[in-house]
Image (cartoon, rainbow, N blue to C red):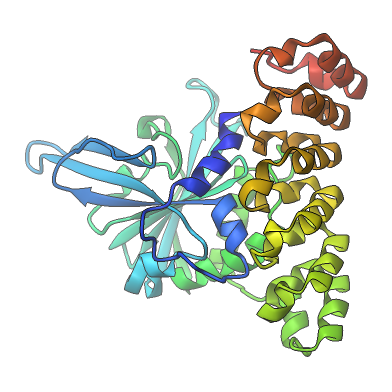
Length: 383
C-alpha cells in the first residue's frame, strides 16, 4: 500500500523554485507521476531534514578518510533531468553493474526471488547513477563526484536506504558502445515511457526493467514506432495526426502542441487508450469530460489526472470500476468509502489490499471480492 501511494507523494516532493517549473514537455505527466529522482550530494555535516523528501546518511570510511556525510534529496521532475545533470549529461557511460538484493537473508543464490537495480559508471567512475524499478516507480539517484560505488548502493530515490551488506554484486560489465547519459535519458523518455506497464510480477517487474536497461546499454537505440510515424509524415496536418493516433495512440506525444490541446484530437486518442491522457495539455487533464473519458476507457489513466479532479469521487469511481487496482492512487477518504471499495473489488479482488481501515473486514466487501476471485482473497494479507 505505502509503495503504491508513494507515487502521489513523489509527485509532491519538488524543490521550491524547481528548474522544471512551467515545462510543456509532452511526457510531463509521466515524469511527474511515475519517476522519482534524487540527487545525492556530499555535505559538510548532517542537518535536521527540512522535509520528508530529504534524508542524510553518514558513512565511516576508516581512520584515514573519516566520515562522509551525504544528503539525498528528491527533486520533482516534469521532464528528463538534463538541467539537473548540467554538463554531466554529456558524459559517457563506461560500465554498469547489476546489484541483486535477495528477499531473504539465507536465500540460495540460484533463487529468482530478488530485487534488481543497476549502478552506472560514468566516465570511468567520475560519478555514478543508480537506476531501478520499484513497484510502479522508476527510481533514479544521481550521485555527486566523489561518492564511491559501494556507498551508492545504500541509497534509494524514494523511501529509506538499504543495507549494502545484503546486496550481491554481479560482474562489472565494461561497455564497448558509446552511450551518453543524455542518450540514456532519451531512451527512458521514448521507448521506456511508451512501453511502461503498471507493476506485474510476471511481466513488468524490477528484473524485466534491468534486462531492458542492459540490452539498451549494449545495443543502444532511441527510435520508436510512434515517433517514426510522426517524423515520416505531416505532423502539422490534423487529418494526418488523427490517422497516426488510430495506428498508435502514443503518436499524440509527438504531435504539435496545438493538437495536444485540441479536445477532439485528444478524445480520439483516448478512444484508443485512456492512458493517452498523459500526453494531453494540462488544461485538458483538468477537464472533467476529458478526464472521465480517459478513466472510463482505462482506469490506469487516473495517475495522470491533474488538480482536484484526481480525487474527485466520480472520477475515482469511474477509474476503479474499469480497473479495480487503481484504488491505490486514491486518497484515504475514498479507500474508506464503501461504495468505492465495492466497485473496486467487484472489478478486481486484488484491490482489497488497498481498501483502508475496518472496511477491509467488511462482510459485503469481502463477499464481493470472494465472488470475483476467491484465490485473491485467500492469499491476501488482511492486516
